[in-house]
Image (cartoon, rainbow, N blue to C red; front, side, top):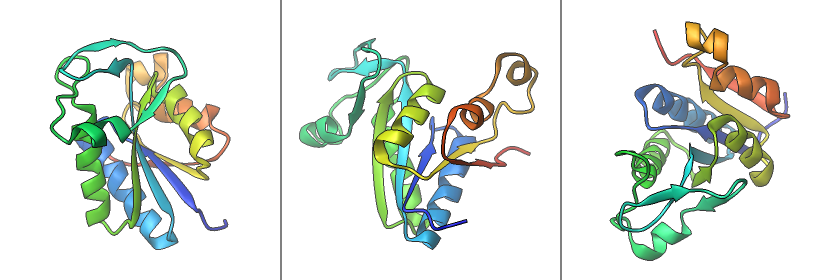
Length: 163
């Protein structure tokens, strides 16, 4: 196994996915790799708390949030705060030793968004938590880690995040 230059990790802000961020951050720090933290969501985020359906294949980064400030009022579906999730995950990653960290918001279903983003950022490793692998719904309908492992064309690290 060679060294990785770019590591991508997906998070939805859950405790389980933040454990995957921790592992990815430590690994990226050890490798001297860039860490890209991504949150996938199904709606395009607008200022003022509104969400509208996104155009397919559209990805965004934090430039809009940076331009408007961290308290710019971004919210999506329900009470999910995409940029708050990314900020918290970024702070966690830096606290775990990752030096080069980028947070990305990606429009789309999690599996497709992560696979697409992995190509866009040139990631050699994709890290996800194992939530859903051993559930009945996961076995019947598929789970993010299982589907990512089938669809991604790069190395996958599935982190054990639940007891």
